[in-house]
Image (cartoon, rainbow, N blue to C red; front, side, top):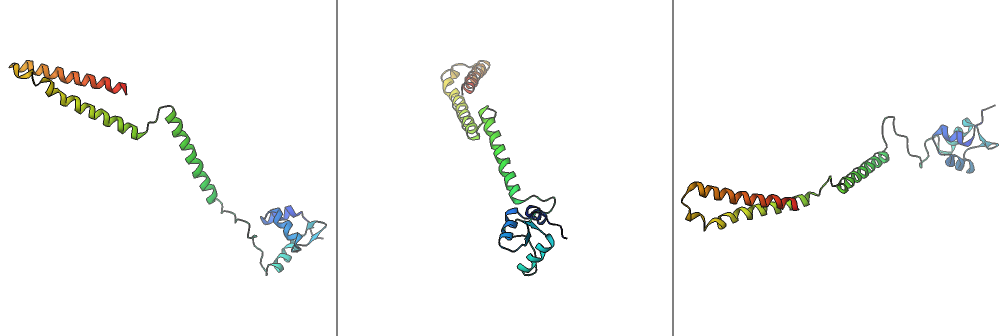
Length: 161
């Protein structure tokens, strides 16, 4: 007598889903004995019903070869990696470890414009005073003081932003 197995066991051996095997039984394509299946008779019946070949049902996704990852798993991995990186960037931005590059450029442009304005104002502020002094050392000291004052006010402006 042949060994009878459950529909679930037959499905597992074939790599099919249990509902698919149950459907084949209900359609009469696989014979049963008391709800159990004889695997040899079931395979023979399926060969007859399918024109001599037994293959995976169309709804089944073929198994991936060993060592390969399915496209779904790859896509899911990429998606989860992107979510983790986005969350990390958000966290760093909230903790002020990350600054928007547009904001950095804006502040730098403002600072450079301020430097340009302050340094260009030096000749105008000293134009009336320098011609009166013939002493080169005095002129150099006045220019150095004006430049130091401009740079000092620029340094305090940078820390206010």
